[in-house]
Length: 307
Figure 1 (cartoon, rainbow, N blue to C red):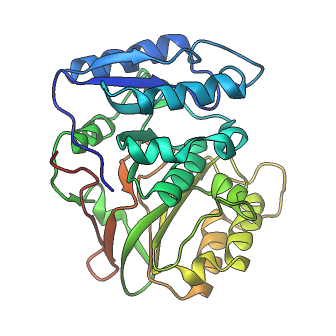
Figure 2: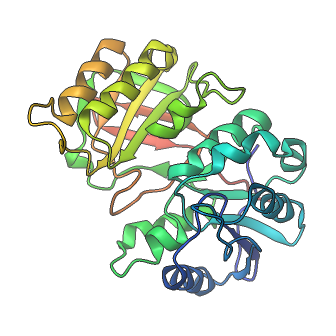
């Protein structure tokens, strides 16, 4: 189920389903949406703060429900990530979301919502740069901004950014729905009703500020849960600042990822600017993708319908 494409003049919503965004970067991010020709409505909990959360759970849930229910709102953009989506996901009205399919955009902690929404409703969502934590920064890569254009058209996506830097981990060709996101959040779904389902799918992973031993622990857990074995292929995105800090002796991040991914034996590519990177290239979660390690290609069906 794909949401309808955007056009100039459309109303879009901004929410903070996890942590509260920084005010000035958020203002800049909202101006960016307005420059795209969109009319922006800001959720009520966006400017609230409850510890490390953007308002209490009920307030953040109400914002999500309100934006999906509002027939005038054509897309929902998350201001930032942080922490908190795992606290609210079991109380979301997925039937409401199913009956009101629209663009849902974000990443990082939003991964839990991408996984749950797609698996519970079939709706294609978008893993892409957020308004406060990405677009609102002083130095924003043009390719991150350009990613938003996929919401205005129905052309398929051909990942070409910095393609010469992509590397083969395991040779092969894979096709299937694209699923995944932040490694920490994917692991946190395990054992819950929203456990990520990778059967026959291309799994992509990324993370930030995790040391190699922490990445090792999480990747190993995904592997033991058969998430690599079940997948058709694996895409390794950006792992920003995932370097040894506490331990003098450490495996490198590359050694950790290569060892675990290679043992799965599924076609795998690494080096993608997907995640906490600059640029942060947006991709639709749930659309059919095809990856080929011979020519380092990664193509994904448009996540947008022509309606």
